[in-house]
Length: 350
Image (cartoon, rainbow, N blue to C red; front, side):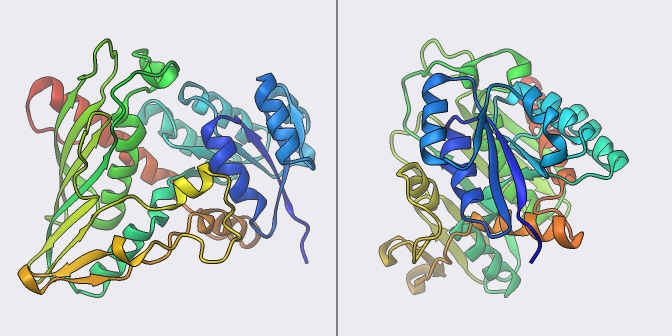
């Protein structure tokens, strides 16, 4: 048996604490060796929940220990994704970056090029590719159940009318704040992953909440090279939620309400090692069919742990990364095209 790959996690906010640390801790072949946070309360939590990991003050201490590490997971604020990723790659470490990879597609391309020059793995945590509903949709499309898909409607909507302090509400472009970068990154990645490259983009990017400085209500329309049209919504001001997905084909349609269960489970402190992980109750299954003939179709179990399992395979067997970082660049290009389209009112080619 090869020794476990030692992981340093930079950032112990929501993403680091609730998502990355638990997933790393239950993945065979990985060992959470270090956690970086300067926040006293978070340092205490990290030490209590992961007693075998050393808690460090800053990323410089990671680079000093690079010879004893294999992977850096970057779950810090968006504005430091690019510099931390660059430092990790130059230190000879593989890098996992929470989305978005960078604040701009130009920065992201530079990181992809740097990883190639350094001969190090770079990947992006687009975990929503392993949502149960998206896995189910992938099976339906691959199996031809919908016929030829012509429209993909997808939503991540929330009811959060009150502002919360933090960089996500910052209008500074380097912070990459706002809902288009946050939830839109997932929606766009899923659409591109399933239906191919974007040919044209139209968007409405709005700031609706009182005193908000960044976008909180977004619609993006993507025309794919495949001919499929994706209609994507993200909102913090949806008092009643629309369907999570409505996918229209020339044979049948698939309509699904409700979010994948894994985020709520992880936020509640549950671990993916528990039996039945990622499964949702029957009443939450989507409907497949046409008209009155639509019938429930079982939702596949969500499998966010598969991302880190694929990471182990990639590092040990020189396989492909869980997410190709070039996909993250393409997603950022669509985000930039969406901003340009919203500002001009025109359709834009990414």
